[in-house]
Length: 217
Image (cartoon, rainbow, N blue to C red; front, side, top):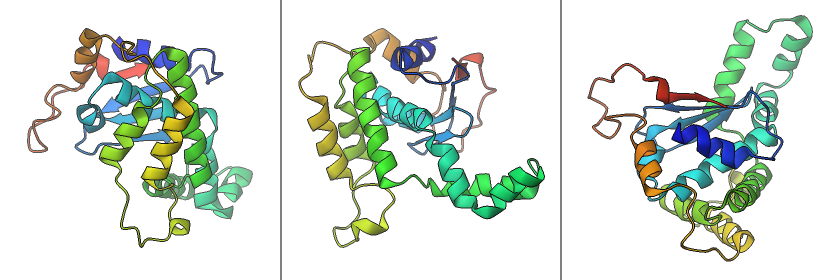
């Protein structure tokens, strides 16, 4: 219920698809991914790594930005090339071509630097509108997505350097009232428990999913 309300606040008035679906899955990687069909999958370690509800909400709003900008579909077509387009024309929508293409797109996370910047800007706007800390995304990125060695050429990266993204996010976010938070402390604690035992390690048997682990808005 807390996740439902958070997604609704971030999506309010932003023209997102009515079938938007946000799902939390148990995993020891701190990440989130946006898939074609307005689906966002959050991995539980991302919630565990967040030091505040605003940090998590900033990442979630970034993923909603990818939904709004249709980046997953664009990346899927780009990753699969003409084989995907031929599949659409010839009707091979359930064959191995599409399955392989989807897998390649998800694994490569092939969003361009421009797409990531646009999703960052979307996150800032959504967080400001929802009453959260619009700069919290920058803090989260600096902690879980540190830059590689400075010798790596920026042009070879699909994502902008984290320090560049963080600086831009803070500049766009502007001033913020530190007494305002996107969730109450009680709601944040509830959300952190959406996958019970998620921080107990990969060897712990996973319990059966509870209804609260899948949320559709």
